[in-house]
Amino acid sequence: MYQIIRAGVIGLSVALRLAQDGFDVTIIARDFPAPFETISAEQINYTSPWAGAHCRFIPATNEQEEREHALALLTFRHMEKLVEAGKHGEAGIRFMKGFEYVESPSQAYLDLTEEKASELGYKSFRRLDETELPANVEWGAEYLTFCLNPMMYCCFLLRNFARLGGKLEKKVVQHPLEVFDAMKSCGVAAVVNCSGFGFDDPDVTPTRGESDLGSRKSRLQSVLALTDHMSLQAK
Ligand SMILES: Cc1cc2nc3c(=O)[nH]c(=O)nc-3n(C[C@H](O)[C@H](O)[C@H](O)COP(=O)(O)OP(=O)(O)OC[C@H]3O[C@@H](n4cnc5c(N)ncnc54)[C@H](O)[C@@H]3O)c2cc1C
Image (cartoon, rainbow, N blue to C red; front, side):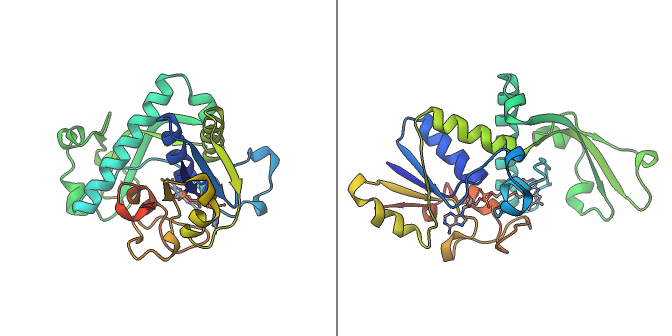
């Protein structure tokens, strides 16, 4: 049995993926997604429902950014597959043209030609010429991207998880090990820590300057952490 701590977009995505692979999974979280019609903004005290939730590619200048770009591409392809499968309505996904305007572009932007962008996985990338740029903007481009409605998307993940027999438990957790203690009798094999703040794990550090309502630390790291040892605390 797996336990996923927290039910933001990261915890839900991981839980669904494990359930799809046939694992017995329980999500433990203080809050679960609810349709926006049923809750007021004051009640939403976790990050995912607030996201603008658009996908923006950032030209990589180091190994960490290359890894983030690879993850962004994986997500892009995943969303494409959902749309191809006709799920865009219930999942709240929409593909659209994205525009980037950069006032003081780094060399990485200046080097981003249409050929290079295509190699990096951008679709329909086109550099904007000077006449298309707003005042004081030195560099601009358009490319295919997507935006999603985070409340719809989180509910979509939760629905699909529940359909596969996934279990939910509403609970405030102080430390991941608590879950092992509480669940000893059920034989928990692993806990996946999907908390962006990491419960004081020193390996969790901010990335990409993602904003967050509660903690100053980034949530994106929790996606990256899933493949790292720190996130999977087997007992
Ligand atoms: C205004 C805004 C705009 C954004 N725009 C974008 C964007 O355009 N593109 C993008 O990629 N990202 C964007 N982000 C960032 C994105 O929203 C976050 O990276 C993402 O939602 C984090 O998801 P998460 O699952 O890690 O955490 P969260 O969504 O915060 O989930 C936290 C979960 O943990 C639970 N929890 C918290 N504490 C405890 C506890 N002690 N015990 C048990 N459960 C607990 C909560 O109840 C909840 O279920 C934006 C963020 C904001 C605020």
